[in-house]
Amino acid sequence: MLKKINSFNTVLLTIKGMRSIEEYEIICKGADSEIACYTRYYTDEGNNRRLNKSVMTAAERILKLLNDCRIMKWDGFDGPNPKW
Image (cartoon, rainbow, N blue to C red; front, top):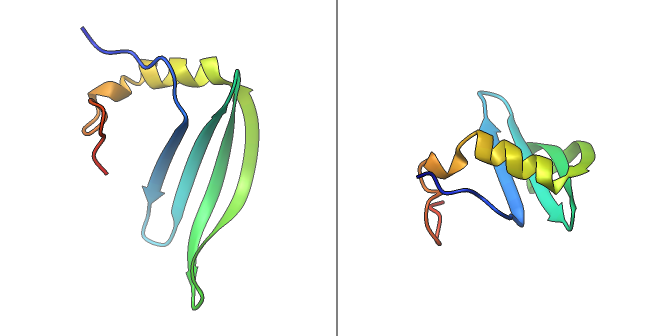
């Protein structure tokens, strides 16, 4: 039987392309969660990220999405210490 996710603190998804890096950060804030999309870029001063958009949604919707995507079957998500 597949394990279900019952709660979360932070979910970070990074998508790397040839010329850009997009980061999606989901932070649980009680019954709600904030989803933010950032663009990562590099300058002479170092590694930076710019907020593109941020929205609020019910944390319950995020839990349903994570379980519908069967994220516990993804490499490194099963167990108390996920791989990085």
